[in-house]
Amino acid sequence: MNQQKFVKTILTKRLELKPLEPSFEFATMLFKEISNNREYFRFMPFVQVKSAEEEFKWMISAKSEFESGKSAVYAVWLRKTNEFVGLVDVHSISWKRENGEFGAWILKKFARQGYTTEALKALEKYFFDMGFHKLTALANVKNRASCGTIKKLGFTKDGILREESFNKYMNEWENYALFSKLATEYTRGK
Image 1 (tube, one colour):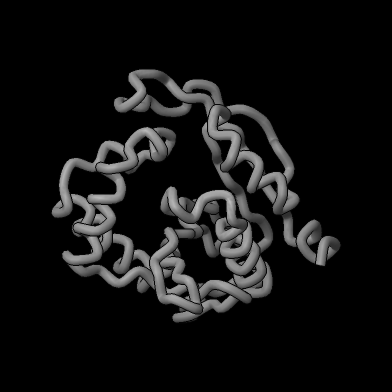
Image 2 (cartoon, one colour):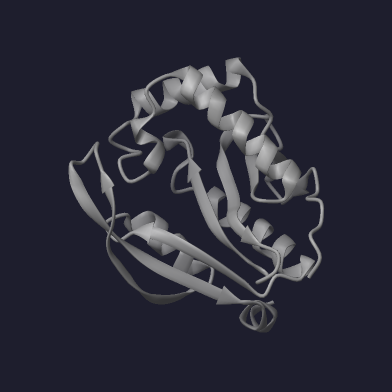
């Protein structure tokens, strides 16, 4: 599979997925949301972000990786109101092996409304239609919402990665569930 440029917009019934555009104003908003909801985001690596400047630097890096085809981070927006909902991405992309890893998070006020599932279904479709062979996802085993969303998308649980990373916020080693979905499984489920 040859490396391709990512599309600029992916639409769903309720959502618009657009490539993350770095701005210090946006970074400040994200940092404020993280700071005000650290317990809600406790399972996410970015819970330890210490400043809007740090968030902004990450955004610049994410845009560079988008442009070079290494990862695809999309900001998720409500189509009706243009409100920011969260981020979804495919990272750790290997064009040679035709695979990548899903990631997602949404703001607390949009939780449990199906937005993450809707956004990830659109991203999944886009990547499998592009010719990817496999998508994977990691979720903290204690994060029932993330594990449930990935299962709802029809991913297979491949196993547990024991003490995969140390979460300084929670002061503990975390176990992650590893999920995967093959292109053949995606086309059967259409």
